[in-house]
Amino acid sequence: MSGDEKAKQIGNATTELQTAKVECAHIRQKLDRVQAAYRDAGEKPNKSDLDLFRIRVINGKLRFGEGSIASPSDLMNESEFTELLLEYDTARKRVKSAVGTLQSLGITGLK
Image (cartoon, rainbow, N blue to C red):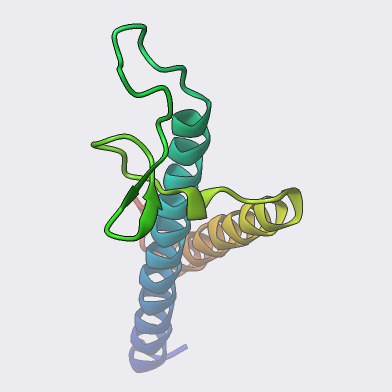
């Protein structure tokens, strides 16, 4: 393989790795919001809270308590959550594959 061919392959693999990492991070953020939504929905109010319900209508939309990063729309049914986890697994495999390609091309020290 010529130097130009190798450089092109490294460039393509680097682009693939970056794209896969961005996709993985996006899905991870969504998973974090889903986790926060379930945590917030299940949280018991403090005895000192005058509000017995953590879910409120704010600006016409359902919201959990103040400071929450999640909203009730982040709650998922089983099939939606399964699909999201499968997407995350696919994205992680894509990252691993791109790292493997770069390592096979002599680029080491990647995570």
